[in-house]
Length: 150
Image 1 (tube, rainbow, N blue to C red):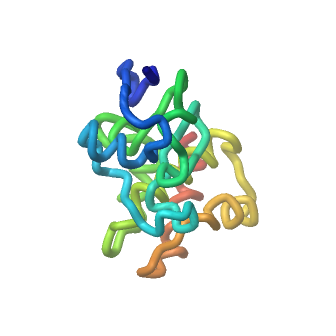
Image 2 (image 1 turned 90 degrees about the vertical axis):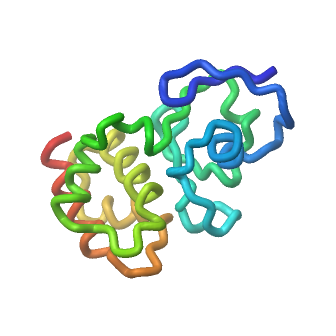
Image 3 (image 1 turned 60 degrees about the horizontal axis):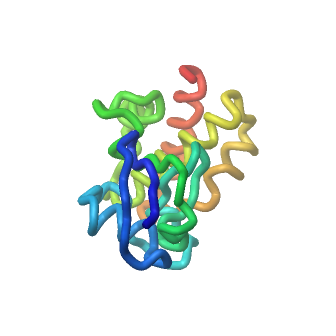
């Protein structure tokens, strides 16, 4: 039996410990904000937090999250008012929106670790997230906006 917390709620999982965390979150718990993109941890659409750090849910097993706190986009702020989420809206970041939960989770983790990142640190910190629509300038601006609030 694997025990973990997801968005502050204690959970028990008795299935395959090698199951990707993303499938557990989406299929077992119905938390569909984290998206499946590449399945190889390269695009960032599946980004969630484990103990505050950004991880790729598609390559992280449920077993690796055992005893830890997992936060999804749904748990970042129940009302969608985390500073990064507000900055995303203020800067009109999303175009198609598919990658945005992963982008937001990466940005929140970056700012949690470094509340005043340099331009290079923002670029480097967000480089693991791909946006097919190319909204990188708006993403950068939103991270810069959120950094003023964190």
